[in-house]
Image 1 (cartoon, rainbow, N blue to C red):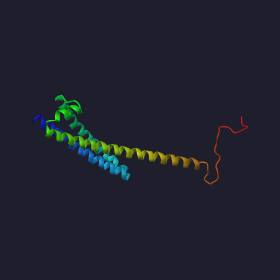
Image 2 (spheres, helix red, strand yellow; image 1 turned 90 degrees about the horizontal axis):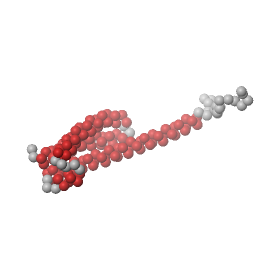
Image 3 (cartoon, one colour; image 1 turned 135 degrees about the vertical axis):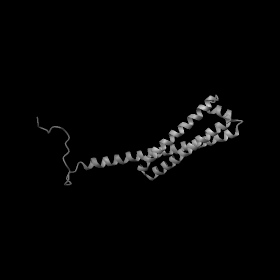
Image 4 (cartoon, rainbow, N blue to C red; image 1 turned 30 degrees about the horizontal axis):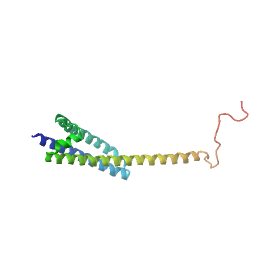
Length: 154
């Protein structure tokens, strides 16, 4: 297999793994929006396996590029100038990675929003619990001990 064909295949393999990850990120997004916390646990395991598989193919492509003396995005673009088949595979990979990153960022924001709402709710509940503590079971205001000693005691 020619170098160009191998590079294109490596990009296509990686794009396939990114597409698999995108599917999990989309499911995660749906679960976050729907508030299905239990579904997130199962998705996290599957997403983790997808990330591991992606890391393997990504590393293979990166090692191959380094062996060709291509070490950064600029040198990749220069190297691809006269290789349309490889160029197409590369840009499809970049596009897929961009989609995955956008989904991951959105999901992160959803998680942070959920955490913020949870913290707000806890604050409200703690305040309500504290104000209720000053009343006894009979509804009368209970004595709240302020200090360790009563006035006049030794």
